[in-house]
Image (tube, rainbow, N blue to C red; front, side):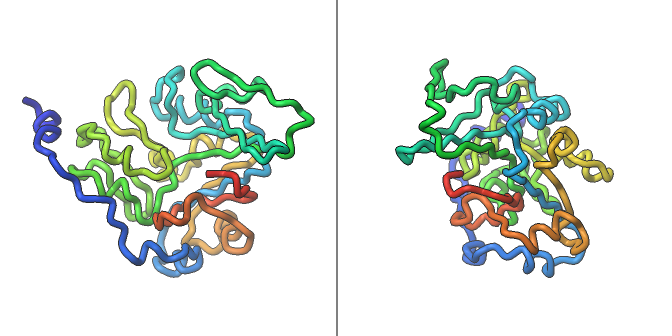
Length: 257
């Protein structure tokens, strides 16, 4: 019996996703800035600039060894179409790797839904990726320490240690984790850590032709991304979970979940 099988069979109970009381406080970027004077990676998404081209998804898959045709991806783009009847229609065919080539909404299992132009009140695109939470529940539930948080805030997965139990996938409230179809371990966005640690940008940031994605250092008050986060109206996803996500959004609509 190899190590992975032994650990899989040995694990019976994993500690629940208990979030400390401090995590329930509303997130304040200025407090995070003052907490540590070194480096804290942070991401900024401008929904006003995203056109749903899918270039970011393509670049991510190629850079990070995720099979191109697999229906899983580290980052993806969602399309939101709001109609006059108050309904919100959301789709992301194959993570939007090929963009949105049809006005029809993909409702899954090969089916689509056509919405008349005159019925649409608003439509927009929202990129999604790992939020590199300040209080990551995925780290708390990993029984072997394969998922861990670096000093500069990025949550990584050690493929050699991961036993594929799936607890981290179930524990993530943002749905950003999946099983890698080739390596058979937990997989997710890591802000292209191998790139940013060498002074490069993430693959998705480099690929975006409209500047909808940006990465910066929250500890640096002169960083252009930090300036926007500190001075403009930004939002985060699922703030009520107390995870303190570090992906901030400009122009985030209330319909986004």
